[in-house]
Length: 478
Image (cartoon, rainbow, N blue to C red; front, side, top):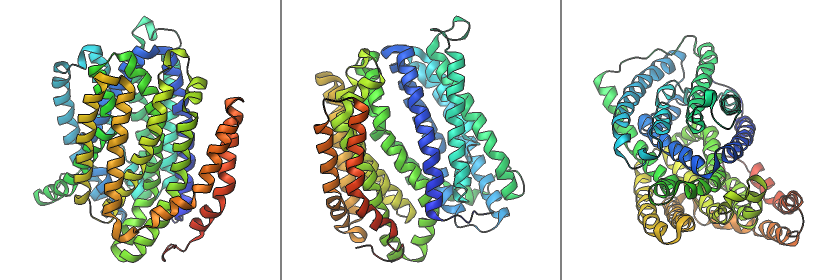
């Protein structure tokens, strides 16, 4: 039932799937931005944001809880029974959110831009009921998790190309409304495909089961801090875009969204990383807190080695990158990407540390820092956007994400100590080489400049990264 692959192999499967998926998604982003123009692209991205909130509320932490619990189950029957109970809860929550959202959206100011874009995106809560990637993750079947993610991106890209072959949508319909249709269809099909290998691993289909009252309330008590945390974390992710949709022109929101979607890849990468880490670290935390702390320190060092150069590269090369990808209508995206590269790097580290709290069964401690961070993001962005527009929103998010990262580091102070700071200092020469190469090659073409910066970093980062990779997982790596 459970895969026998090692942690690095699991990470390899997920990384390969994520790289392929994100390359496809980047191509889709550029295609949509140029095909729709800043205004319609902004409306679509606001719809994506509404969908994200709907999916989080409809899921309410059940999938994160499910990964952790399935990682600790040993029989097929127990996994099927557990997954069937959570499927029933997911169905109830999805139907409630769909009904409430269908009624509420026309009454929100965002609905005046294109109500049907928002409503179609909200329909994604239905196929999410059967989004069994969380079961496959708990079983450590990471090749299928990564493959399903690539399939979703492939289907989405193919459907979009077919639907938006002309300037308008199929049969002359409004082009932007085909975007959510294509996504929901691709999401549903990719979820159905994963159900086939799940049946083979578990010996039967996952059948929805009605849990008894005690189990029902136990699940919801456990998911309350996780779901609440994910919801307020979503505020930290994209309240800026929602407020831009309310307080600024959709074209401004579209330019901002083009930059934020690229910077957000940092956070997505960390979430994918934890897809491989959560099952095993959950078991490790239950068996040996000391070994868990040592492994968490080692993996955080590797995460810093990936996050910090991407953030610095975005600060240095952001305008050049956006100029390569998009036309002059998106001129605001470059300066915004510089700020958001630092902002989302901090959020990525905060996301890593927050997931670690869930693995340790400390999810209750996660809520307060993200709630305060979300409040800071909401208040400062609402104040800054009318004064400075899109750059004001980006600076507000940088403040909120920085506060979150520092707070979560404080919560891990006993297990991590000053090791994250020492790990970051170990990468300083490599980061300096990256910055030097980026500035030295400023006058040449962007591909050569990017390759020089990446190569300079890789050469000097090799030895600390190699040391972290080869450190024993059950002893401190410092």
